[in-house]
Length: 363
Image 1 (cartoon, rainbow, N blue to C red):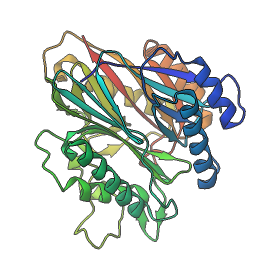
Image 2 (spheres, rainbow, N blue to C red):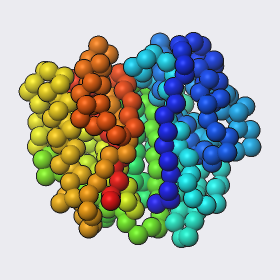
Image 3 (cartoon, rainbow, N blue to C red):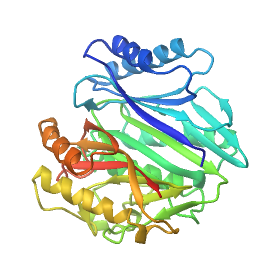
């Protein structure tokens, strides 16, 4: 995997989306090789989401007219209510082939593909229809870049109203069914991607992927404290209504993947085995979530020799905004080193209050 770096930038005050974007882009060094910018801000409905997205893309194109980074816009309120951006830069020499909504990187026999946020053509359709549309678009991108579906090693899935049910069919389950159909078109001999399935306040469904070919290490990591998500029983899956499927399908992702010396940690919540925590206390769930993540990245659980691991970056999703100060205090006290930020988001199960994802590095 090619060396990359991630930094966080925040607008200095709450203002129009264009002003906040300009504020952030003025903070970014033009000397860096910027591959992608992921923006986070709330939106009041799909119309505002689409308008914000258009403004953010136009702002980035204006600032970087010849080397335009990919753009993703996630409709999640930030802790400060200001615009936040994750800036991903390339830290080594590589050939960069830029397309309108994806980038291919090539260096020393390794090829990587990164997309910007892929959204459906019609946000008003069902979650299932939106997801099918997105996966059709991803298939076109992967084929054009000569990548297989099974080359995906990291995927983010943002789903508006993730736990909402429509006529007895839950949005997250509809997404999982569409993903299962897309994934059935290939063989997964080396495990599924690391992934996050998380709520958003607007924008329908949006998906980001990273894919890789080559490189010495690319392996899934299981967590002994949890049943693999793709092996969940039917009793913990929500209802669906897809006539094309004989039964509800599981969320197809690994608890983590390792590429090179980077551990890509999937969205993790307070789930032991396949059962959610019975606590409705935010600090209890936060502590339980980090205990599960800590076990995942112990050197004994890593499938290659290592002396230790260290967290580099954590993205913390909190269901209720009023809980963020408690979560932030706990995280800064116990995990002060990693770069991190806090977002308001529904979690994939109604009883869960927090989910955390991130990256760790093998030492």
